[in-house]
Image (cartoon, rainbow, N blue to C red; front, top):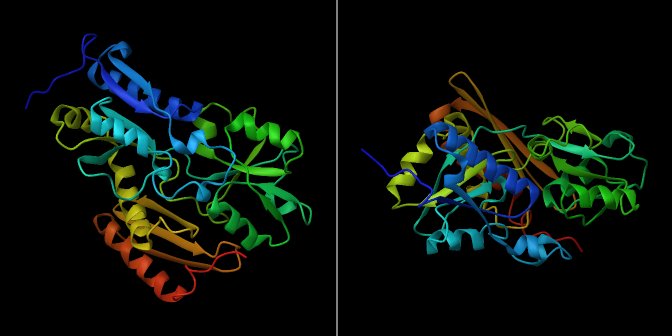
Length: 317
């Protein structure tokens, strides 16, 4: 089947948030498409779209809405035809897409670990008792307090430079970033950080992965995206996102999960925590790669049964 490639007269518009990391991800998408079809980069136009999660920086994410804080406006532009594809950090993506849109193209996953960032180059274990750590992530907050209930956690948002300035100003002694972001921004050399093993801090669902969303009925774009889709990443995310969907990731409950591949075997780990870190429920399983989504759903069911009805309704006083 033939399909239409973009030209200088009819560019393919790539929608993205405007943060430095989001733009780096959009440029990676453009470069991979350009290389796959031997096209000049100029036939791909990067369109920056303002999203609510970026516009509101003075409140915690849970205070300004649930699903879609970093995706809603971009998806609307896709539905309107203003853009042709949308590039997303997969850890920000709701498990269901709006009617008319589909998400089945993923770029090769980058380092999925979290990074502990402190100006003195120290690590999490050596923080003094009562130290202040900044994060806007419910998951990271709960995981940290589960291991170090003596620490204080404050709201901490912004890009890499903003967070480093907050550390320099004494707002907190340390914070967290995603290793994938540091790698994609080429900041691993100048940001004082220590990668956190996944055995110590299980990452967010789909952390480190880039997803490319499109309109369901756009066959030309669908065929273009097939050329850059990374199947192993898709297989891992299918298990992780099935786990998240079965837990209803819209709730204000910290959820973490990671799928790894070894030959024809998929290994899945998952956990849910109370928001204050007082309890963590975890599970792990192995199976055939094609069974990944069912493994994710089964693990979620097991954790839900163990948690009981009060676990997810609990709120910090």
